[in-house]
Length: 454
Image (cartoon, rainbow, N blue to C red; front, side, top):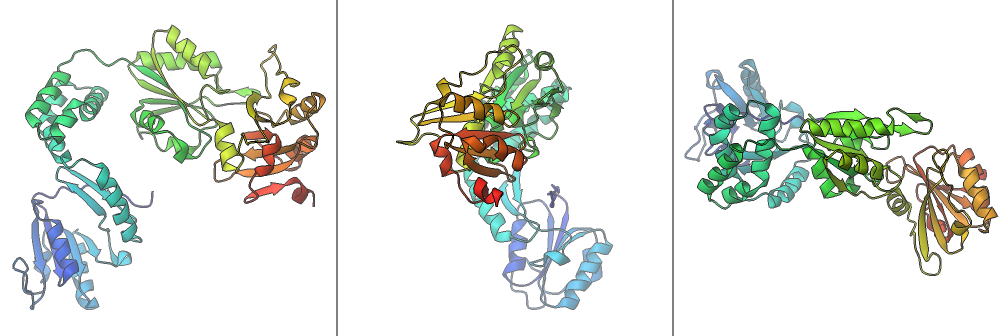
């Protein structure tokens, strides 16, 4: 974060504006109805009725909280800025970010709710563009909801001394019928609904959400997954979830890492299930965040079974699994007329004593094979498919860190798969794609086996 947006209470604050013309007038209008005392010094030729027709003296900056300067004279500009800073005021020199202590964000004003979008002063037009998009999504009556919350704040604090309980009350109030009633202008009905909600004795039960985080690109999160992350009290996440996705979660959520990799399970599966159950029984909203989709080679089914057996509510939020996300990022259609009439997801790893995949059945032509966890077993995949009848010249693609900024894609033939993995030092997470459609892998940002061998 390069810019921190602070919320400054305006009632009773002194705002000094120095300048003439439209820029200074816009700053003066910005604080209309704010409750602040605005002193606008527009010079001897001032025409506006609410402007003072002179430049400020040093004493005019006494008690100033914010100072806006929009003048062409550098001497006057620097003098006023120095006076303001000497009195502890924050100074903004309009359109000159390098000379300013703060920058004015693009604002969405809903009275009690104010949203600011800032770019550190380097791209104000971009900030205004973002503002227009956000503003369209906010209901016009949002200020009524904020005023209603202000009036009930002390009652809620007295009724619910526990911070977590208060947060949950407000979340329920702001997402349910009370919000809709307030936005429609039916504030009395909204207040009654909030009070009924407040007087409900039963604490909300805990719940576990099994959430698929997708292949790694935060923009591939579903809206439901994002909402679950932002509501979570506890996030139990694995190794394949990047920081860019965890950063979408509520900042005060407790994060617990339970990552696994080959031959290194930091937390045994049974303990993960016990952890989810224990946290939910404390009344927490728990998100079990898993790379890809929780039900595709993610052991989500085992966790679902355990949580249900414990009598805890559980919600499954699907995610884009690696085969879909990585193939799309590499430009590979998993099915394609005349090249692939079927696609199969298979894992190259089986648990000790487990049944190995039927590689003969998976070796049919015109059939795409998406192999999960296949890096360490690339030689086995190669040999089993060729032994099962797959043409050794069948195209293959290896997609490492698919959909992420550090994605690498390599292509070659099935008979060279293990050597390609070794030569390019491919590391997990990586998806192996075997089939005619693998030849579609985009060359941009990719390397092909012929190039690597040169």
